[in-house]
Amino acid sequence: GNSVTQMEGPVTLSEEAFLTINCTYTATGYPSLFWYVQYPGEGLQLLLKATKADDKGSNKGFEATYRKETTSFHLEKGSVQVSDSAVYFCALSAIRAGNMLTFGGGTRLMVKP
Amino acid sequence: EAGVAQSPRYKIIEKRQSVAFWCNPISGHATLYWYQQILGQGPKLLIQFQNNGVVDDSQLPKDRFSAERLKGVDSTLKIQPAKLEDSAVYLCASSLVTSNEQYFGPGTRLTVT
Image 1 (cartoon, rainbow over the protein chains, first blue to last red):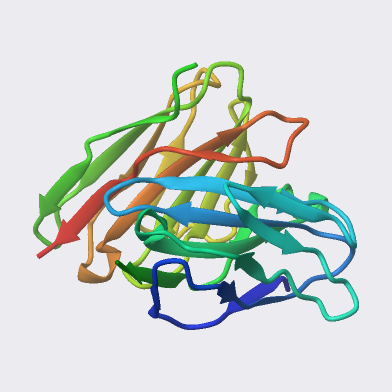
Image 2 (cartoon, each protein chain N blue to C red):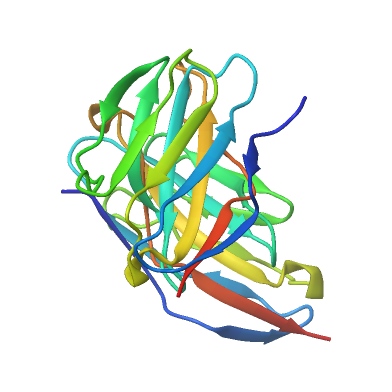
């Protein structure tokens, strides 16, 4: 079956530091890949997505590249802000599975001023 | 455009009691999902509807959980009787049939004591 593995947190960074959150996946076929963000007390929000190999998703300074050869979709940001503190979820969906999302366990990011 | 609405936001019940959650998807979204998110974990799909038909309920504990979407719009998820391990956030999401982007509601946090 499909599965997503992401690095465990919490990840604690100082403001303006570089961020990487690792995500790898197992899936049959060609899934779409997503990063969702969950701010404290709020629901999940789509941060970015990529639908095919070598696609780069980007939003709000965050980027992730769909790497089929390494089955990875690592999230990066060049300079984090305190307001980026949240839980980040990597996920995949496959048409064969009705586009249901399979999530990783989440990574909590804490950014200190 | 209004987002996915869920109610109640919080619910505390005793074990063996019953509880129901309500979801109103984004207008025009034919596909509706219910996910269970246990603290510290990623969301897991419980059931997926397309219009008023069930697409996937393979992960729904049918001995105690039920869900319906009678008119293809609003949906209700019920638990009867609740167990301690049902304590979680229940998330509703919706999407267009032609899209793999899901939009999430704020969730209902259930505590079973």
